[in-house]
Image (cartoon, rainbow, N blue to C red; front, top):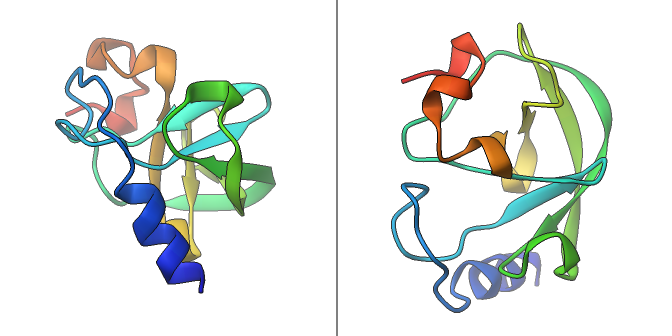
Length: 113
């Protein structure tokens, strides 16, 4: 059932693209009042550290979007969780804070292309 939900969320309506993953709306993580998302220029893997909290997986709709799942949010070694986070499991990935996503020069050094 969970995989059906994953596929459904990832197949939701298209969202505006600014270099993220070109075109489709991808799952994001809401954590500590911020929205984090993947970006095609970021490495898909990074050395993850300890769990720093719990986040919610959301589809299109920004901070107010309904949660479709929960994830353990992990620190990325050498990166402040205010800027970027990592997850493991069904929603594994490296996520950059949404307002930093369009400007790779503002990313933490370990995540810059």
